[in-house]
Amino acid sequence: MESSKTVIGPRVPLVELEDDERLGPGYEASIEALGFIANLYKALGHRPEIVNTFVPFVAAAVGPTAKLHPNIRDLATLKASKINGCPYCVGHRTWKGKMYGLSQEQIDALDGDYAACELYDEKTKVGIAYAEALTLGPTHVTDELFEQVREHFSTEEIVDLTMAVSLFNLLNRIGEGLKVPLEPQFLE
Image (cartoon, rainbow, N blue to C red; front, side):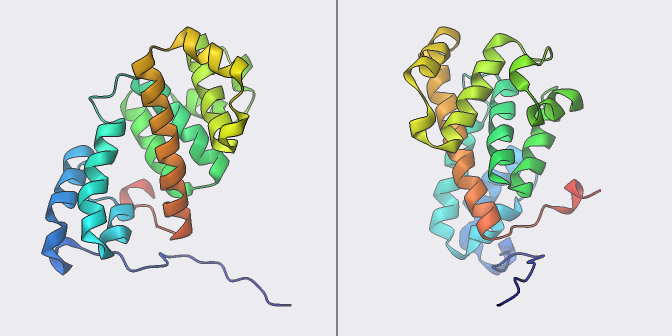
């Protein structure tokens, strides 16, 4: 029987801008959105055409033009990232959530019975429930749950919430599949 090895670092080398100038547009979009070039984008840097289209797409999906309140977005995507076991995305979503005013208590409450948590309003609870169901699989989003979503969110917010959660399910798979390491500022 083979023993499994623990992978510590990235499964693919991280590509710096000086390694490939074609990465400029995507990396600049990362700096604009985050203030730094995310390691996840550096892992994708072996394919500049992906980075240069994907990073602006991520910014459009979860950036300042989104109609969904940032706290709901961050709790929903953090819930998805926790379910999927992606420490890279959990680190990023925790940082973003705190940047937008989430407390550590609100973040920690995702690990318990969030539906009974007094730290969240009803809209937030429904958003987290939708994120959880969508992450477990689209067939987990029942008509009853979606009716609750429709009661609390506008059509634009539903699209933003669905996009954000779906996007983070993808990012979780990239981050964990390639074992992308957290940037140093998240390890301090």
